[in-house]
Length: 116
Image 1 (cartoon, one colour):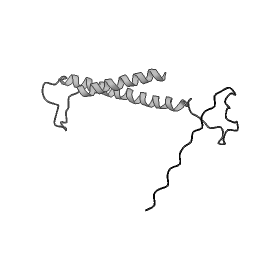
Image 2 (tube, rainbow, N blue to C red):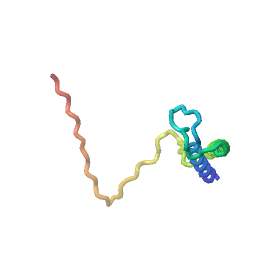
Image 3 (cartoon, rainbow, N blue to C red):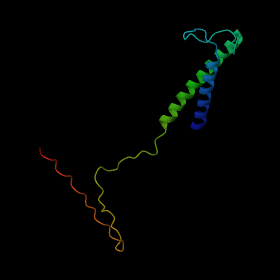
Image 4 (tube, rainbow, N blue to C red):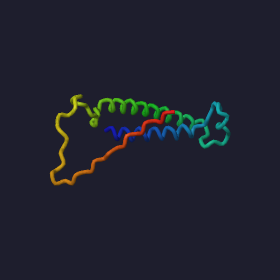
């Protein structure tokens, strides 16, 4: 259910972006658009585009709220909850008796800083 709703949400969002970009600018606040000979012209087309945008916006809000509710209801399955805060009481595993011995690593100590 959530996947179907998410796909619908994405389709509505992309469609709404396209419809908004196709609309004719009326304000001219950015100094571009709104000139003659636009892709969508005429008063009737503007009304259809405005109604379509309003309907898509309503669907977008409804799917957003529904996805939020669905996401809140689901409990995370990969959450790790600690059972105790103490160290484990089992000893580390021992190597088998026939395993070759590993060489001891010696880490040299850093030299003391020179006195001036």
